[in-house]
Image 1 (cartoon, rainbow, N blue to C red):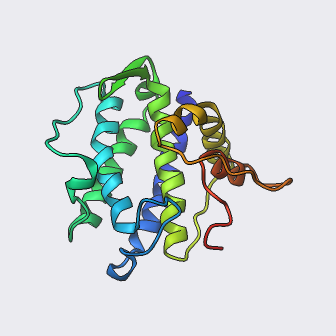
Image 2: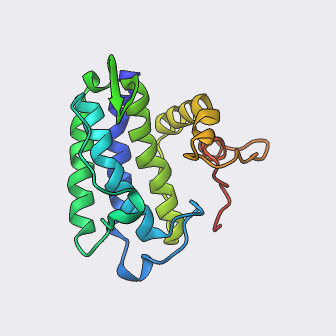
Length: 193
């Protein structure tokens, strides 16, 4: 799926635009991810970003001394930290070689293309989560919507078993490909609308 490398930078740019609009007053807002408010979702992104980057570079994962919930990474400097992390992920996964061969995400060995699709999904799905939580909208290119739909449909059952996705949401007949992608990832496209 190295052709998806070309989708990373545009998706990251849309994601960054959503991040830039988040203010202090938004941090306690609920998100479509039931267990996360905005601050916790930012913490999630900051916690897992280095793992994804290491998988893309095919280097050992970061050493961590605490879990995601205890990490507290969404402090006052989160905008700068997330901007830099996003740029690094674009640098890594914008290159076709990051999508080729096998890699490890932590101790799990998997095709590198799966990790690349996870990064694209982080930008698109969590960008949408943050946009909805803060009363804005996210523009998703048709090619990116198609890619995240195929990925969410392919790994849905496994992702649900690992509590990465919620239960699939049935969408209306005539739903867009992105609405179908949201449903496949356990999100209600009408959340907050």
